[in-house]
Length: 260
Image (cartoon, rainbow, N blue to C red; front, top):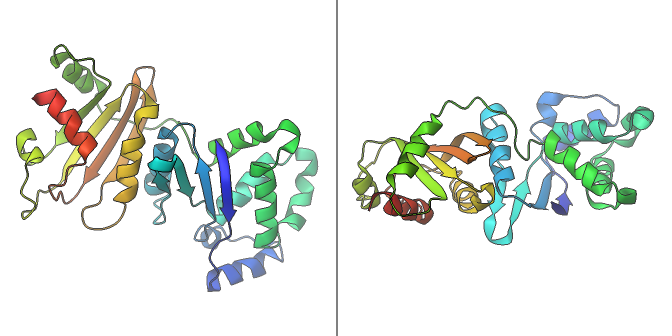
């Protein structure tokens, strides 16, 4: 992981009020959770992004979701002011914790602190601080309540003859057949679709990250509902409430290999 840049939250009335509270060491998690820094990060594994947006959209029910630029192997992370302060407290050595309240009285001071942790060498401790950051921000693997029956993916893999399978698409629910999904007329409403994607290597999930990131808004958005990873690979469940016939190319390619 490499942190490329850290930008302060956009200036508005909420930020101004938050800084007035910080100046008096008063905290307001509800308000602070609506204020977001912008951190551009180069990831070692694109699947880390999937866990982060799962955390943001499902567990935190947050409207501002981090973005992915797979072509540059970068993500744009939007951690809240609450998260940033929490990370500072988590990472600061206990013997120095008493100094924190006086060192985070402005957004600029908080930016300086987070920049020091994430971008300075820190006497060789940078990797450790990055590890703490990924863990605190759920930017990487964590346990989830995954209900998908993984045997379904195994059965699909077993049914594909003479092909070495590294990825599978399991259409769990759709009003359309596989053939119709691939040649669907966009003039009609395709309804709600849920599918689980399997990858043997989590580092191959870049196209999934890019697709979800590009369709986080609008009537035809694709959303993530769960992620699970084990020794066999990674499973990602996604869905859309309004399929428009524009099946992402990487999913189309996998389906055509599976069924044709």
